Image (tube, rainbow, N blue to C red; front, side, top):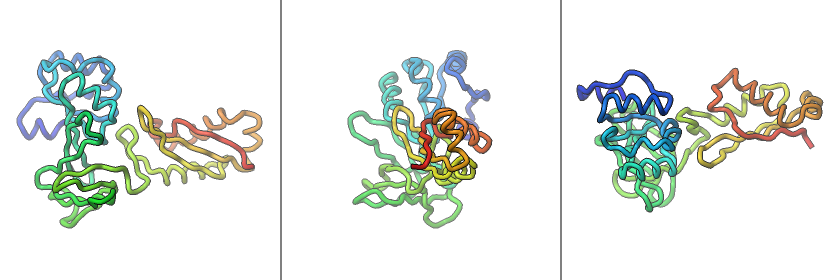
Length: 250
């Protein structure tokens, strides 16, 4: 949203819009524009009917994580044209792009010019990239699983490790489990991914001897709020578990 207009000599809006009405007002003020945003923001504003007018948005770019199927479909249906998704990371730079296509299952990614990608063709496996934008000249692991379809075309098939994107922010499940276990109340903890309209994290926590008395008095709901509240000192709320269960050891 900054480098592209600077590189091409185009003016750009310097205020970050966090609410749909701010975004719509800015677009109406300046007329035909290009939007560069994130999947999290796009998913929040797709119900406001703002993408139908091509007089406002010539193109929509999304980066940070793949769009959900429902968000990509809503944008494409309103505009009769899909958002342009860009895949990459801080470590690799830009890797690939795609336009969501209806009725084809998962839409393939196309490697950007000058970027080489490597992944197994028979089944999902580790996706590697080699390009001028990485931190070394050799192949670099993305940490993602991919499946090669043809030269320069591939599918993304999830993560190869326990790092995932929540609201465009990285979350390491093992680290969060460790943080839970540092709490005096907790003796065991497991995290899991909950798929739905928005991907979220669920937590199952077993309280130890210190917390059993409190659990019997306050109940699992209040105890869960205490455990989750203790995580707030370590991480921002958007990345914390949204659902969970707390119980004493059997």
